[in-house]
Length: 253
Image (cartoon, rainbow, N blue to C red; front, side):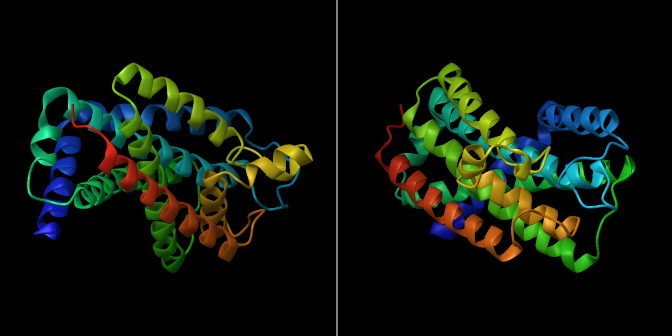
């Protein structure tokens, strides 16, 4: 029964996304602006902290993919607020199913959509000059994308469980997400930042995601791959638990 609930919510999220072409295009616009703007503006520029032989496009793309995953995953919280608004969430929550299954279904659906976007960004990156690694590294990169998506889908659910309106959700998410992006090392090496900012950056879940993708897709990062993966597992576990607890306590109206 619980697996059917998770599957049904997963399938609903996929269908809603695929039927809304504007969502697909809209969710890609900001990552593409960063990708094209910075890749073109800094093409051929030597960035301190980046090894010889790695151009800026190679350095930038993993960070932009992680950024795209983060932005799309947190939109899972918006769907909760929409469901509250139109009464769908109330119908689900009064059904004889565990709320934990509802959380897992939403995380699965939103994460799948986010991974689809990450793959689109990777394909577009190849067009502008990014070189993909071997197939094994690509498979491991997919695992990293899943973990990043789970982390930020859970974060979106946490904020949505505490909010009652779209304006408040968007405001809070912007306040949270943009500092996470700029402190993740997505656009420049963390080693170039002041020491105190470096310390804060290593408390950022997106930092672990960026470094894991950069290790796998480029072969270079400021953080060991194993450490990056451990950080992703820890953050995904903690945030999923918090999201489940808060969602269980939240009201459907």
